[in-house]
Image 1 (tube, helix red, strand yellow):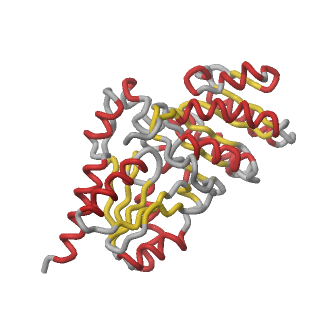
Image 2 (cartoon, one colour):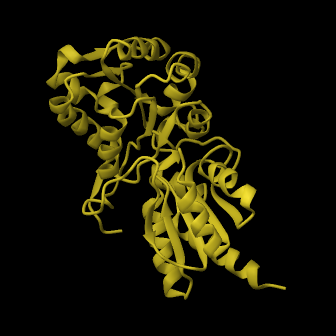
Length: 316
C-alpha cells in the first residue's frame, strides 16, 4: 500500500481545533492522556473550553453528561478501553439512558496500544457500546473519515461512540464522497462474495479484493463504517447477490461487526457468513502490525478465507 499514511489520533486533534471555530458550544474533556489522544491541541488553542479531569474517567462521563444538558456539545476523549469499561455504568445510566448528545472518542482502539498489552487494548469496545440503547457506533477507515465522523457526530441529537486508531494508516478517502453515519460505502462491485469491513483493516480488504479479482473472484466490497445503526438495506442487497459474506474487523468477533452483520442477515437466511477477527482471546504486547498479522487480520487472511468460501460452495 503506497498511499500516504496519517494517524487517526492526529486527525482527531486537528479536527477538534477546526470544529471549534464553527461550533462555539464544543467543549472537550480528557482523562490525563491528552498528549496521547491529541486532544491537547484543542486545549492549547481553547484552554477555557478544555477540561482535564485527571484519571477519573467515570466522573468525566458524568461531567460531560451534565454539560450536554446546558447547551454544550461535549467530546469525551480517552483510550477506548477506558471509555467502554471504566465508564460503562455512567455511559449507560446517564448518557445513553437520557439520549444525551455526547461524543465519546475512544482512542488507541483495537491493538493500536500495542506494547501496553491486553490491559490497554480495546478489543471489546464495539460490542459494549453497540449494546447501549440510543448509542451510534462509528468505526472510521482512515483519518479523512475520522474527521467527517466527528463533525457528523456533533450534529446528532444522541450519543455517538467513535473508534480511533493510534498508529498511522493509509489515507483512503481523500477524494471520495464523505462518510455518512448510518450508510455503507461500496468500494468494489462483485458477484462472488461480499466482504464487509470496518476500521483499519479496510485497506487490507481493498488489497485482498484486488488479488481476488486477479484470480477471477469478484468481491462486493463494503466498508461498514457505522456498526450501529447498520445499513441493513445495502447489506441485505449485497448478500442476496453473492450468497456469501465475509466480515473483517480489528475486534473480537463476539459482538462486533461480524455479530452485527449476522444479526442483520440471520432472519433472511440469504447468505453464509464467516468472520475474520479476534477469536475469543486477549491480546499481548508487541509491534502493532505484527499483532494484526498474528491474530489473522491481514490482506492474506482475507484472501485465503475468501478462496475457502468460494471453494466450499462448489464442492459436492
